Image (cartoon, rainbow over all chains, first blue to last red; front, side, top):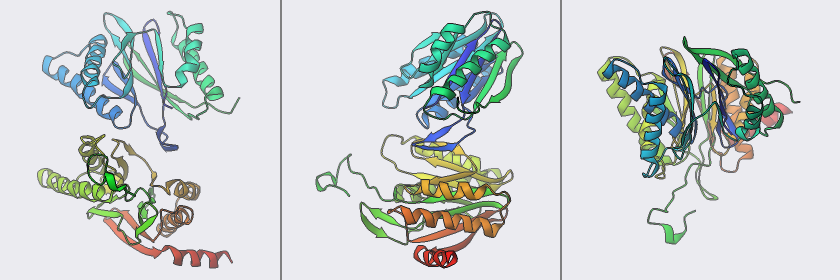
Amino acid sequence: MEYLIGIQGQDFVLVAADNVAAHSIVKMKQDQDKMFKLSDKILLLCVGEAGDTVQFAEYIQKNIQLYKMRNGYELSPTAAANFTRKNLADYLRSRTPYHVNLLLAGFDETDGPGLYYMDHLSALAKAPFAAHGHGAYLTLSILDRYYRPDLTRDEAMDLLKKCIEELNHRFILNLPSFSVRLIDKDGTHDLEKLIPVGAK
Amino acid sequence: SVPVEKWNGPDRKIEFLHGTTTLAFKFQHGVIVAVDSRATAGSYIASQTVKKVIEINPYLLGTMAGGAADCSFWERLLARQCRVYELRNKERISVAAASKLLANMVYQYKGMGLSMGTMVCGWDKTGPGLYYVDSEGNRVCGDLFAVGSGSMYAYGIVDSGLKQKDLTVEEACDLGRRAIYQATYRDAYSGGQVNLYHVHSEGWTRVSQSDVLMLHQQYQAEKA
């Protein structure tokens, strides 16, 4: 039902998430932000079971901020991703596992842009592009076909729009809008919400 | 209904108030909170006079859907926490903070059988506040929520009524009352009376209590 997507370019990461907070067949909220700012250059996109998403994401967020306060410098995106995965793994075989699927996007001074895919079974994979949700089935092939490592920001945006349009066309559930953000060396930038129009 | 052999033990479920309609929406002059008053145990109507709005403090209201005991207990506990906050910080707690306290409290018990779907409504220094919190761990801020078995019927009325901007207090109250009435008309598990509250900058006011059958006569007469 929920959808997350991330596309890594040469010097940026473009991410988008749908805005619907659903409860059985009702849209309780249509402008829900599913992205959590872990630091100036790291975003955590989180979907999954009600309650677990916000609680887990905020827990990671606060711990990342605590690390910065204690040590004087921030965790890199790679370290943050591994920290997140470790927490997921530790809770996986407990009585209260977190049923969440995540994308972590960040920009490191030395390593450049990075996109990390994590799922509720605590898998972690660094990937040039990734998606979560039923919508991923429809859009991963589009990303496979058209993705290039040297995409410019506009080209990545066009690719993202292609994916959203496919969802609008084929996905049975209506996802009326998507939040879009871009991370590069200058930090996180909020871009205009994508609102697909008209059935095609 | 509870099978005899499962009266004790972890499988025992007391489903009292899932059958309900509660709603709340923000508008220009605050928040309207409207609820029905029927409690059902299976197909048996246990009560037609349940108070489903919990008065947390003079400026915060909570609605009750799901298990009656769960709702009233946890919201009473919330009231205590809000008072402690007030004493510690010398200022009223915000609706966001109050709802977060409740959400965090029940999240600890996730998966253990709590049943609670509540709306925390109030007015703080940022204006009118409305949050939906449930025992699954959901906590969502919004302008309109309806909770319970009759919620979808209520959404239909309020969504279409709110399209006309700038309601007066009276119009908003009528909308809330009408939405609950329409839900009780269609949903077998909702009924009794419509209890209506209005939250404004000075706190909440109990606006009215109207029997659903009387409303039926009234609306029928208006149609004619």
